[in-house]
Amino acid sequence: MKRLKEELIKISAMGRASNCSVNYYAQLDPKMGVTRPEGSSANKALRDFTVERMQAAGLLVRVDCVGNIIGRKDGSSKHDKAIMIGSHLDSVMNGGHLDGALGVFAGIEVLRRMGDEGFHHQRPIEVVAFTGEEGSAFVVGAMLGSAVLSGKMSPDEALSIRNMGGQTLDEVLTDMGYKGDCTYCVDHVDAFLELHIEQGPILDNEDIPVGIVEHITGITWLKSIITGFGNHAGTTPMHLRQDALVAAAAAIRFLNRRAHEMAKSVNSSVVGTTGHLNVYPNNINVIPGMVELGFDIRAASLESMQMLTTEAVTYLNGLGHENGIDVQVASPDVQGPVKLSEDIIGTIEASAVQAGVKFRRMASGAVHDAQNMASVARTGMIFVPSVKGVSHSPMEWTEVPWEELETDKSGPLSQTEDISGDFWPP
Ligand code: GLV
Ligand code: MN
Ligand code: MN
Image (tube, rainbow, N blue to C red; front, side, top):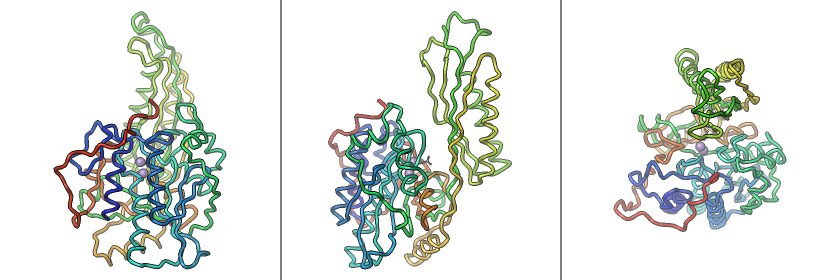
């Protein structure tokens, strides 16, 4: 565990605005989150470190054509299907360092621990770090790497997606040195396991260290472009305006209100968020002529998610009838809710009972690469508590029970090589 702790501390600095590592909760700063979208130097640094740690643990490391990193340790029977463990290394803008990376480094630790304890496994075990889970750089879609590995998306489609700076995934991976040549055949995976921070408040509130995920939420990303007419903020009378932002604001209010209402009356898991907004030209003295809007709509039930999505689309289209406003709504990007393998859930449960660890079954309101992997392999997820239920935030934290180790809570923050600076986009 000491190795894992040291690794987590080291990676806590990678992409953090302060460029400092974080050893304990009180060192977190709400303004100093982690930003490591695909293509950033922090992302490359974390990839390099992951490969180095995998190799040091004796894994054979390969990289596929969309940058997924796969480290493999053969078992006594090379020809059996593999158990794959892992998650992702990229982050949202100004987020936390454990979302995703914890699952990758925990996977490496599992193999090291097996080695230390002389445990001989029969099946090959693979640790994977998936590309582009967050959709923070390549906003067209989340979970890109696992979508390709699981066969839901073709490599060509993924590689041609452009980030907001206009670069394709292909170019970004090539620049980082992570456009690999391994063709991975997912038929060789029997089971997939992802350890992840909960990112919600349940385990922390109930003081339970382990969550066993039964379902992962469905998610829809709905993007639209609202066009009005940019004009002078001082000289254009109120009744002559075609203000795209005012129209967008009404849609944002609508989504929020309907999500509240549906969560009360239809399905408590319904949530609706406007997380993406670009205003053009974004000058204080110009009436906004165009707005790009991104809605994130989720629910544990496909019907409820579709209901809210349909209402949002209808509302957005309706705005187009107002004075001189045009609305283009893209077809929604939908991932249905996923049920995880009862088999794996039972195995995790039995292990928790055996280890005397308190646990509960639960649903995931966040999406994960496990969502894609569940369509090709028996898949399970283990959650660990997020302090105060906070994630996708600089204040994201999980207390790891390091009690057998000495934790120095008084020392200074450790300064590391400067890799925090090049956020993307700038
Ligand atoms: C991924 O972290 C998501 O749930 O958006
Ligand atoms: Mn995330
Ligand atoms: Mn994640």
